[in-house]
Image (cartoon, rainbow, N blue to C red; front, side, top):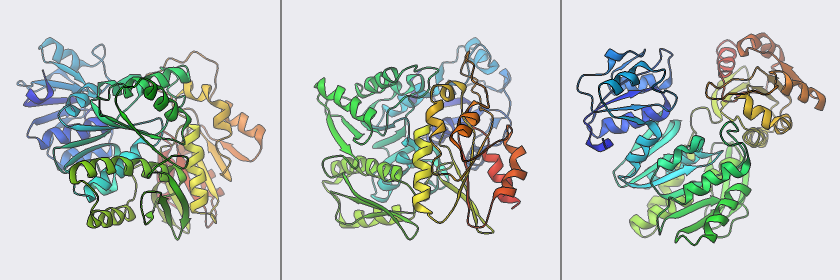
Length: 471
């Protein structure tokens, strides 16, 4: 069954950021939406409750309503182990994986896919913020809660354009129907599925091949992998246009200046007469802004012919108030002159750029970092890169590897090997396997003026929350 032919949809894994966001968009179109998930509390609980979308906190066959037309499930679940998916099969209810459902949804709009190993969540959040300020008829789906979206991961301002964060893992983004793609970065990652750089690059090339004649690839010229994808697609003469952005880019979206001043990131672009100011740190943020503006420029000019002075003014004002998205340089607060932050950075490149941006933004603060690596395959493949990624931190506290249920690691990497490699390099590095057990150590290390940040895709964010609330 086509997604838009359904009236009653049941979502398995409804608390997940992506599926919750899609459920919200379907609900806004008048569909009857319900679902299920585990009992753990996520920020999405409040969103679902505010929309009066009912959901169970367990999985059982009897949960699926009698007149359900379609079951959408998170890619984390399968029919072999999930009783609700088994029940849907038994009752002949069509099953649709979340990436495929997102793809069907995207086919109804002029859709824009934000893709890349790093930066796609912030770029999506920035694009949505810009397009909303410019009054475009757009819907946006980001991979995390966004402050300027009212603390949700969706924005619904019309039915012409759709901007969505799209995921490369297991080539999920190949279900999407893009007319525009913003490509932030391509490098080795998800080694359990993409064992080589060439294999992950091939996935992004195939994604670019989904662009129709007249479609647009907006890519970061400063990123080697993204530039390689653009070169491969350009050589194929597919009838698409290419728009580079970044410090080394040609054209309007070349970054001509990037500096921190008075708690703001000031970014100059070649095609704009006045700089943009963001209260969010980092050169990587400047790149994400340039990519978001490049996409917005295409849609604004298509919709209105050109930017109006009022649009330009409102966009600059909205960016000046942009607070980022959840777990992306997210400020928890400040206590006793110690600033507490949390960030999802879990790849060496993202760690390095995040810490460099914070050091530039807060030059007087010591950086005290808690890091929990995610997946054994990624840690093993990039062990040397991880060991070198924390150069801007004064103190690093490492934890056990946060394993993934989806990987089957058969190597010899131990939880302490990154710690031992970093010890060899010198510097203040500690190891506490369980993040919450590091509370006394963190409290003993912190000094007035420090910035304490939890990094990674694991659950060490709890450490920052506990220390902050009790500091």
